[in-house]
Image 1 (spheres, rainbow, N blue to C red):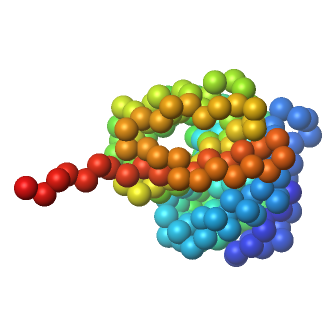
Image 2 (image 1 turned 90 degrees about the vertical axis):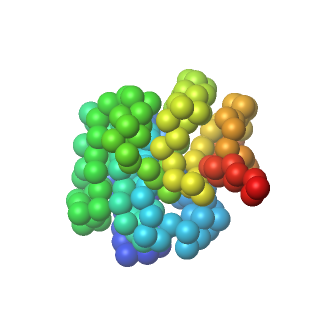
Image 3 (image 1 turned 180 degrees about the vertical axis):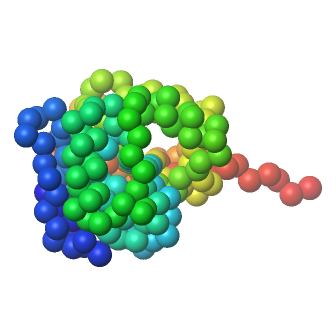
Length: 190
């Protein structure tokens, strides 16, 4: 697992010694960031199920200015922290331990909003549904921001709340990536 391009191009990230963490494959990550393109520059990113920090650090390497990593696992957070240090990205990164749903709600209540939110939870555990439910009442995305969901190709995307639209879905073997746009409904001019 490596940083594909940008300021930390080619840097090999520390990986877990067990299989409790399922990092996004490099080919999937490369395709994902090719789709995002230059929209990642100078934005705030939230990595909900950080694991190794793979997605958030790729975003940083490509120009994201502020990345917040959340994970409930102490071991995962040690990996994230070691990879942040390896990339020398400490100034742009924040690491939070706990349940991502609770932390995301707290961040929203503190006025935090993000341009890209990566949601790569353990497959088939109901986490995507929980995140989508929270977004209905606590939209922690900026208007025009994206929730990027990685899921099993066998799992369905839940019904999205008002103001959220799945604009694109890509399939890579047993993995699907959904690009969910948050756009506030425009008021009709009178």
